[in-house]
Image (cartoon, one colour):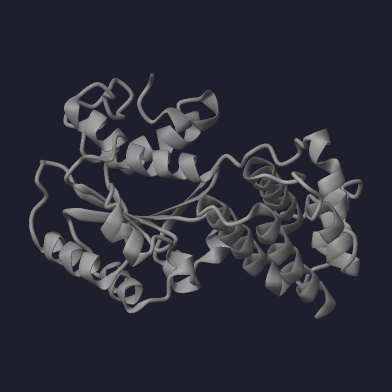
Length: 297
């Protein structure tokens, strides 16, 4: 199995080439948007390999076979630190992993590490996820570090769309857009659900009867519906919405200034499914938010 498998396809050749070139003079803050969440994380770790591998390959990228590359791919390298604003303190304490919560204790520890030299001969790379959903003092304290250039450290912000982040963060970053998932592909099996959700957004009717049916909705199906919403909103925000898709038409009716907030709601709904919240309740809560937003337009 290749390292950084989620970005090993030809679709990501250009992204890898850009990262190779950037590694000669790494930016203080790199912002990775687009793609899927696993692809953004893989690209961020690949970038960490670009600035840490001591045996670069023939095209200037990491060798992908040395212990450094393998440790970074596995999330185990001492100079690659990751924080996620969506991880709760309780979950972080109970199940500490390679990605830690964005809380004050962890950030104090990180800031101390930033004062020290990296363990290896490369750079310390700090990955930041879920920043748009965390407005804590810890997030504010960490973001101040982005303003302090360091020759031995660099940061990577990961977000589905740069519009989800504060403009001040985006202005400090070099932005790189990963290939978007195929936003035009739609599963015919989801069509009844997309139509029901579109009807509810515009009229407040027709969805709860479907979600309330016995065994009508499980976490897998709910996740597919949320992905369809994200694809649809991506088309709407890029001006490529499909007039034949009811969900596109419904989401296009939402106020422009509310569309980024809707993207955050999609992410929150995905996270709720990950915490085993009842799928029907997740979809109903999201639909209610979208309907209220539509009616407030």
